[in-house]
Amino acid sequence: MSLEIVHYNDPVLRKKGEKVTAFDAALASFAAQMIETMLEARGIGLAAQQGGRPLQLCVVDLRSVEADFDWKIDGAKTPLEIFMPMVVANPKITVARKAPVVTSEEGCLSFPDIRGDVARAETLVAKFQDQDGNPHVLECTGLLARCVLHEVDHLNGVLFIDRMEKEVRATIDEAVKALAKSTRAARSAPPK
Ligand SMILES: [Zn+2]
Image (cartoon, rainbow, N blue to C red; front, side, top):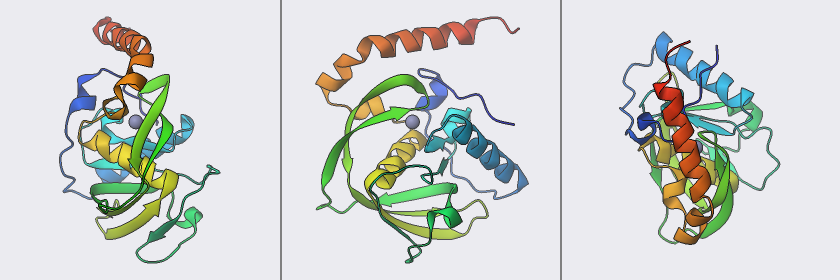
């Protein structure tokens, strides 16, 4: 069963995720729901907060994307089909100080139809655990790095609108306010 994707400005999106400590059947089931929800929504990433739970957990899948990016997982260029969709728990990201920064347009499943330019590091290294708790190291570039940075921001309660330049943020301000208003109205509506 897929999850209802939480929209801005639901308070759960601002919550820092708790560390995942139990790699059990309940976690596997929630991760599977997150993957299903992401694929249904044609997203390339989804954070636990967007499924209503503040956890250090996100899912990523770039199999369907034709974009320029590179990767190594645990030191090898394993085909995407083998390790995606990825379940990423407790990620720790390292960005080299000299890593180039690239500005590109981003969207977010919690902000339907809202897009804007965000500057992010072009390369990173992420240490994380899979849904069984096994540790991994992902080195990546391009869109995969951007996606991981976007999702890990979610896990810390940070949203892509927070990362936009003032001028960019201003161009979507009305749409963001309207979204917050409709989310508030939906939350306060009596249950059907
Ligand atoms: Zn997002």
